[in-house]
Length: 83
Image (cartoon, rainbow, N blue to C red):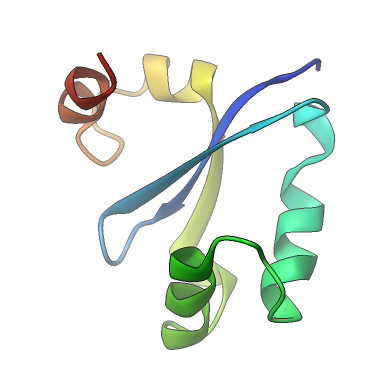
């Protein structure tokens, strides 16, 4: 998969963090490693990761996932916020 937009969803807190990367296919594993080691560059996401104790409350999605799943954390609201 080439470059694109991805989202990390905190299902428990109903928050969605968006990012852009050149190698989208390979992104989730490095995100997990950085979060687990306390060195992810998004301070809010890192704080939530630490608060909620790890990856069982979080999921990774591509832009295509977000477009196909209208119930994922209120996609309609997210899309209107982005427009």
